[in-house]
Image 1 (cartoon, rainbow, N blue to C red):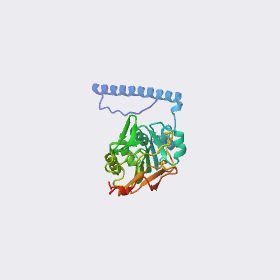
Image 2: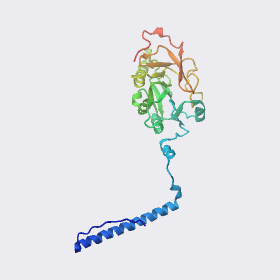
Image 3: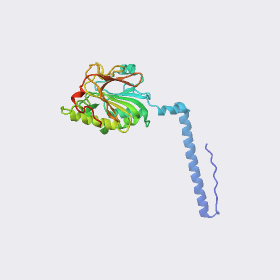
Image 4: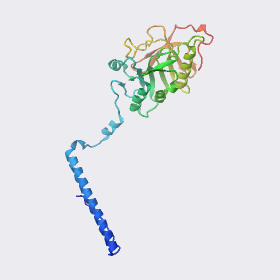
Length: 291
């Protein structure tokens, strides 16, 4: 039984005052019965359900702050290296886990999935990703970032997920988009896709590089950014094994005056190697522009 003490003050012994006294006693009595009933039910519940009784400690609280990623969708450890894989043909998760090394990775069907997975793990954490790669296919002027339905994007500013991802990047991060021909013919006025390529080059540059110390690498033409099965990423080898492609390297000062092969290192970071062939710059009065 729960026992409570009550102090009641009576002004006099008139009929109205005694009636008020009786009402007070009845209310206390009803409340006492209700409290005893609730206490008995709780005691019975605790005796019959010992599995619900647990001491919460610091380790238990940490579980609420750490969220695991579906192993079929990727590996996240908080690394400063991150690959997003647009999985239009599925993903070989065993191969990715075996080869990715220091790189975190996720496989998605669309940008919204990428943001949802990353935000569930990173939350509001910002400015820690030093090397970011989005593996996708594409066409001149656009990257294939959504395969369900199939949608290509020429303006990163219109992709909500990229705004979140940009907040994860350090001010001097390296950013690589493997989309085939994303800026193809952008340096060749008069070519059929010059305008589309130039448009993409400017918009991706403004979005990721402008006002920062970041390096942006955009695929000029066809690459072998995926292996023969198209469901895993090529770590530790140049993305261009076919010897007729390259990346443009953009900084806030403008476009570097060569094409580069890019290697994503499983140990972390990227390597770049100047290409000595592929385009004769002397054919153009201004082959490379500042954006």
